[in-house]
Amino acid sequence: TDQTAIVSGVFTKVTFATERYDLTGAFASSTYTPQTIGTHHITAQVDWTATADQDVLILEIRLNGASYRDTYVQASGTGQCAVRIDADVDTAATTDTIEIYARQTSGVNKTIAGADTDTWFMAHLVGRIT
Image 1 (spheres, helix red, strand yellow):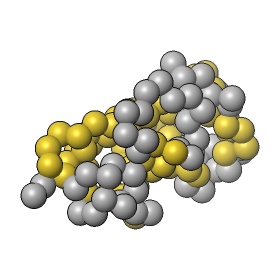
Image 2: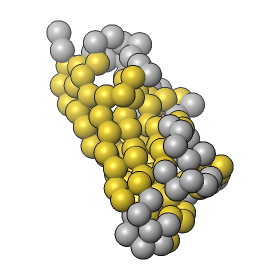
Image 3: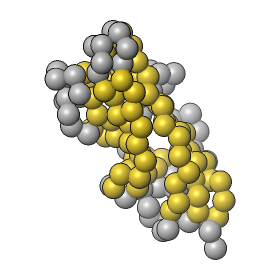
Image 4: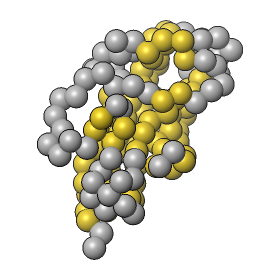
């Protein structure tokens, strides 16, 4: 399902409708709770269904609600535009949470494509901290 009415200039939590596999039950309500202290590799993509030329599209990884890493693209032309982010995130507690937020600066509401081939999230443990 598309995520509609993404307000310009406001960070909005991205929702991921499909879960392909989750062996430890760490992903629920579009929030990843790693359950293991360590370094986790996070990759996410958001596909905006329509952009205007020069729209700035920002994607952010949040750890426990605070910005951890972000990236952006500036649209060139109009049409669909994807933004992808990758980062190694260090967690310090088994209850830490990781979420993806998106922001756009078009001046009007926009839509994030809901298909799991367009907008998606992946995470895996790189190494434990003991």
